[in-house]
Each structure stands twice: as structure tokens, then as C-alpha cells.
Amino acid sequence: MPHDDHDTIDGDVYVYVSPRHLARSTAVSDPGLDPLRDLGWDLHHDHLGNAYLTAPDGKVRLGYLPEGDDDGLWRINAYKDAFGPPAWGVCFNDSAPTEFVTAFTTALAEAYRQGPDRYLARPLAGSTDRDPFQAVDPLINRGWCFDRPDLRTFAITAPDGLATLEYTTGDLDPAIELETRDARWHLWAGTSSARPYWYATASTDTPAALLRAVTEAVADPAPLPRWRDDTSSYVKDHAQTSPIHPPSPPTPTPLDVRRAAASRRPAALPAASVPRWSTTSRHALPGQRR
Image (cartoon, rainbow, N blue to C red; front, top):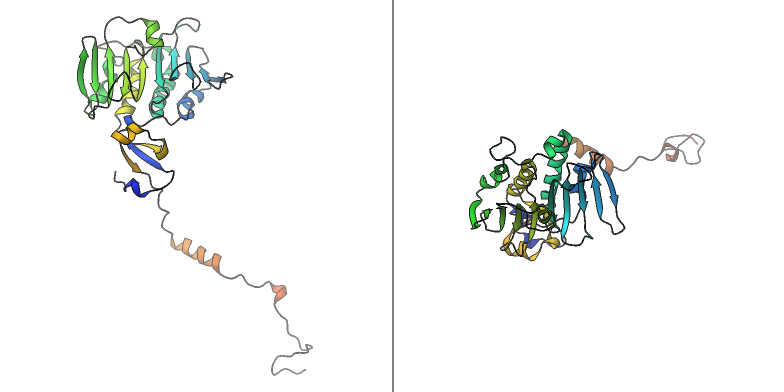
């Protein structure tokens, strides 16, 4: 879509950021929380201001943790038993584009409506609707390229080389997957996984349909809107930005023109203020008898 040169725009304005994997977090939690809040999930806060959402059956929990112990801003876990260990866990760090989180929670809300067979569906190679390849397919369709950075890792990288989805093979410790970035799935932007612009992780048993919702959002070619002042150095160095101009006012209709003209017409004097001449007036009209 064509845009004018954003350097001609002054002040605090919105810009489009493209490709969208180089946008940052909006630092607004509502879009990510709302799909689950709309299901009536319980929301509460701790004394630090962190927010927690819990499903009615206690088997899916989300934490929005701006005051957490690390940069894992969004942590979502699902449980076979509400009192047992997580069956799967997903994390988005504090710089991950909020739209990608919202894509995940929207898909999770739909899976939760359909029941545990959906939101606890383990990936299964060769399955019609649970194959892990589902998560990779949207990226391949947008020209991302396969790589093999080491013997245990498959990777697929964006055409600009600034975003990568990694899949680690072999056995992994479930606890380490949930607590660190050494998870089965690792999605990140930047030139180095050690120092990413942003990242997201997902453990082994995260349903493929939920992962696909995220990769579809990442692969979408549409730019993301951001405040210009919120764009970071890596966006300015590598992304394309263009201003978002407010829509032009609609062309007035003939009725609009008549109404506007009427509103500018001088109001008529009230009847009580109109002079009333009479034959008894001291100042008779010309031709009248006094």
C-alpha cells in the first residue's frame, strides 16, 4: 500500500512497521487478555500489578507479568490435572509484538470452547489436524527458508534473515522447557538467538493449531501500526516505516450543503420585537391620518 514520506510528518504519530516481525510490543495487555476474559475467566492481580487469568476448570492459566522475575511477560500453561504439572507452556517476552500474543490467546479461547481434546491435543506427526508441520506451513508459504544450524535443530528463516522459527529434536526436560528458552519451539527476531529483538517459546506438547495461529500472524504481510516514538533502534535500522494518515472527511451531500447554509442564515427576529404600527401611533405611516 502506498504511503507518503513519513519524514514530512512531525509530532507523535502512528506509523506502519513492515515486516511485522520487526515491530515491538504495544505494552498494552488488553488485546491479549480479552479473548479469554470474554469467556468469563477469573482475573485477579497481585500486589505488584501482575495479572492472572484462570479458566473455570483451573486447567488453563495465563500470567501477564510486567513485574516478573525475568523478561517473560506472557506465560500461558495448560494442565491435564488442575493440581498437577503443566502439560504444555508458552512464553512471549516483553518485546514480542502484542498481535502475536493475541493470535495465540484467540486460538486458545476457541480451543477451550471445544474442550480438553482441543486445548490439550498433543502434536502428532502425520495427523490431519495435529501434525507439527502445521506451525511451519504458513511461513513456508511466505517464502521462509529451511536451515539446519546444528544436528539437533531445524530452522526456518524469514526472507530478510531477521526472524527464525527453530525446532529442537530429541528428548527435552519438561521443566527446563517451561522455565528457560531451551524449549521445543523457539521463535525469535534479530540476527542472533542469544540476543534477540524479541522471542517466544513453546514446549513439546503445545497443540499445533495454537502454534499455527502465531505463525500465521507472523507471516501475514500486512504492516503493524505503532507510535513512531515507540519504534526502537532495530526497527529504524531494518524495518520500513510509513505514516498512517487519518482518513479524509467524506464528501458532503447536497443535503449536507443545504443544512450547512441554513445553519449560517441569520435567525428571524422574534414576533414580539417586530414594530407594530397603529392608527393611534404618534408616528403614522405615510398616507395615514393621525
